[in-house]
Structures are given as structure tokens and as C-alpha cells.
Image 1 (cartoon, rainbow, N blue to C red):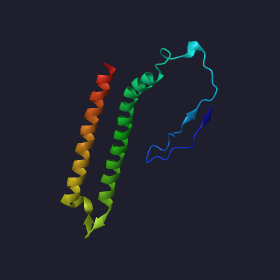
Image 2: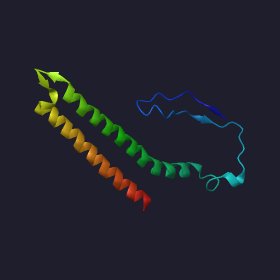
Image 3: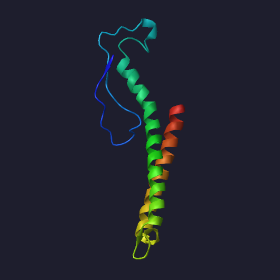
Length: 116
């Protein structure tokens, strides 16, 4: 067993990603998942469920970004007042919050459907 170079990722850096190489590895038959020759299909079915957890992870990142932005606009001043007082900034934050809530609803719906 050996590993490839670490992937360069834009986020989720706490979860390192590398290719795994299995050279001359023998797996006992009682350790196989699924029937022989169905490995790719089994992996794709697994991805169907893990994509929802990735959506949930992205949702948490987006919520964190919104929370940070809300704090920042209260601290940052322009023309003698916090930029949170400017209507354009308020529109941007409202749009962010709306998109996050929509993503949350879609993620929950997908998770419920996956469980069914």
C-alpha cells in the first residue's frame, strides 16, 4: 500500500486527500464487499450517500462565512458609521442568508430521501 501526493484543495484542509495505490495486494474472499466485478458500481452507490454529507459540510462552511461577515460589517466603518448600516450591504447579507436557508432545506430533503 502506498499513497500519492496530497491533493491541493480550496477548503476542508483538515481532511487530507490522496490517491491510494494497492500493488500486489491480495484480499481474502470473505472481505469482499459485493460480488466480484461490481466494485465500481458499489463505489458509486456509496458516493450517492456521501454527497449529502458533503452538502452538509458545505452548508456549515457557508453558515460560518455568513456569521463572520455579519460580525465584520458591524465592526468595519466607512463615512463614520458601520457598513452594516448601508442598505446595499444589508441586501448582500440577506441574499447570503436566503441562499443558505434554501441549501439547508435541499440538504435536509436529500438526506430524508436517502434514508427512505
